[in-house]
Length: 185
Image (cartoon, rainbow, N blue to C red; front, side, top):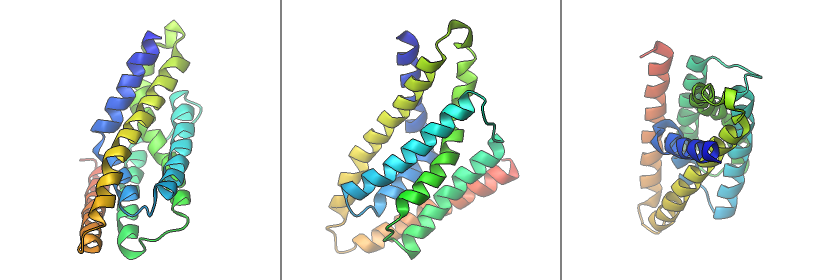
């Protein structure tokens, strides 16, 4: 149980300190028309990133970290741009699910290094489960804070403009991150 608790905390810390993952979540939250739609989108993202997190953490699949990080940045750029050009998306859950595959690999990069310490103790599944649930708890915290703020913002006369400008800023940040990650800086 100690391994589970430790890795839960590490997963929570990882998501709450991961500016790239937070930007991606914020972009999804900004244009979600309802909590039901947001739940569908976040569920697709969660399922797919959980699958790749486990597969990568157990070394069943291996993805190049540089490529993974560049694709995570590209996901931020894509969703930010999509928010501006086509904010109403009926199938956003598909996009979130596809990008979740890449984000899961990114989450696992940190986890894989930490797993080496518990491999000999037989606590691998406790560690993976704890880490993943920590990430999920962090996502819930972010959603619980941001979605009510977005709902409040939508009551403003300038809501469309503000959401568009925030989405542009998110897209621009995604572009900068992508260039940095491709360039190795």
